[in-house]
Image (cartoon, rainbow, N blue to C red; front, side, top):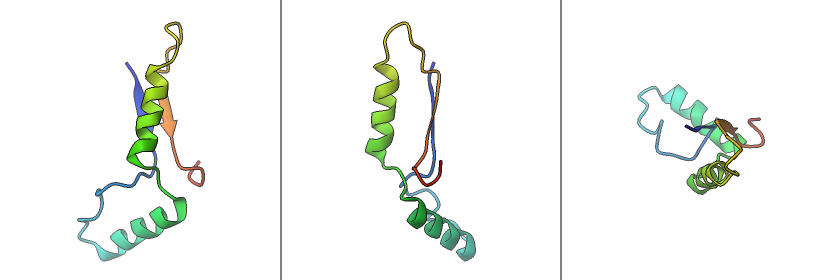
Length: 68
């Protein structure tokens, strides 16, 4: 079993928030952090499953450089 935990990622999540302040805060955070993209996460997953058979990448936290 593998657990990949992405940090701030470009998605549609949060765009339907009702609170304008929270939505604006999320937008500013994404602008500053340069969020990960779906291909970034796909590459991380591919890396974890391509590990040698004697290596278990059980948990991977993947975050933008500025978030880490």
